[in-house]
Length: 124
Image 1 (tube, rainbow, N blue to C red):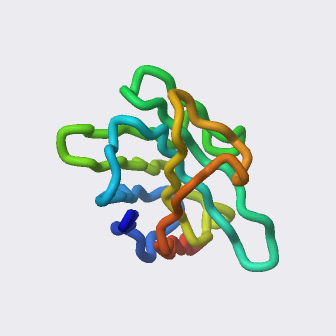
Image 2: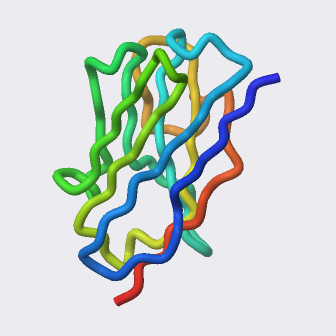
């Protein structure tokens, strides 16, 4: 049974930082590209960042470029999202997702597995 479990969310002031983690089990982690998405109330799920199977290629949504960094540790089956200079508009539930194949995609339909999400709230 595949499980993706996010952690690290919370409440932070604008300008602050958080690091999210996603622990994967039940799958051959190195065979999957990984990504983070987020969903704010009343909005569609949005691509935040993605990373290729071996971490050599990364992709970011326009609104988080230069502020967020995605990384992975294939030995530990973990993927991270370092979030810096947080803004109130970053407030959302953040989801970890896995897709077969080498490279991440920006559309949700490409992803095979999803975590339950972790709440990030940025106060102004």
